[in-house]
Image 1: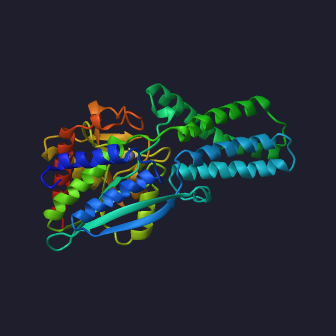
Image 2: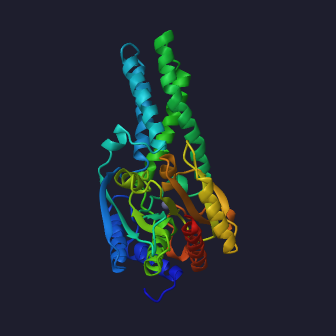
Image 3: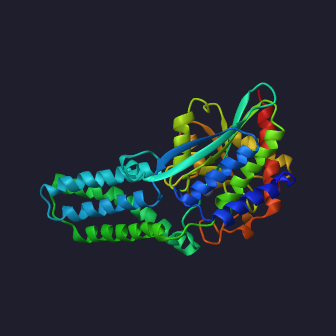
Length: 390
Ligand SMILES: [Zn+2]
């Protein structure tokens, strides 16, 4: 691949990941193959690769689905009243607490119990040509998501959004209802119970359906980004930045709750405290975009100075970086939440979110070489800007 330009090289890596390895479910042998490929490509550049093994849940959906089912179960066992009401209240509180921690991507007893999958991170460090003043960590996740029904069309997404909202309300309403029963001592309110039970039954079915679907080929989410990270590794290993140490990181298990970056921070917290993280996600088609706010229920914003650097860099390549609010999380959510500085770079086609995201149609033919060329130029300008800073 030595004669290829960075965009063509990124595409070749993406093709290998998507077509030779295939869909790369979190903590599956295919994700492990992607990790091995990523590591080998870095080693070919004479870089020293560090590998980190960790345990992770294998599903983004199961922990939340179990919380909803636990809350539903607590309602059922509360029916006879008496001492069982106390048990039901304790279970309903646990379900609400775990669900909130889960959507905020915090470690809980529940997700630790479900951490039966084996996954890996890999990274290599490219030292600067001169004295080190800055650290940049360019990251892309190696896994691909499942293809849940709720992500296959706008219609199902809207239904899910409605039931998610009702679900949060129900998860909070159940402990309140049970506490009120204990304190005031009123009898079962069957219409209210039925309404809560129906919402939670439908929501848990929509959530748990995801785990019965195949994995996405993940060309745009996120093979193109992994390919770009590797292409950047080649470029900046042969022509290092003047004062910026560059880490190239391929993370595991992003799609099930960002476990790769969580465990990476556990291990490298002090070494990367001052680093700026550039997270690549869905960069294969469209116009440049910056995720300025993200998160499922709780939200995280990106640091203003990194946003400015990325916006100015886009202007220098003749583009305007569209600000984007994401209703889901990416690895920047964890990083910014834990006080690190991270920005996610995207491309968005025609100003709209990618229609093939988390579908079986996220295939190589959807990637656009011109977009990847633009993204490489953008990343390079961001690096140059950071490199200038003392
Ligand atoms: Zn992704």
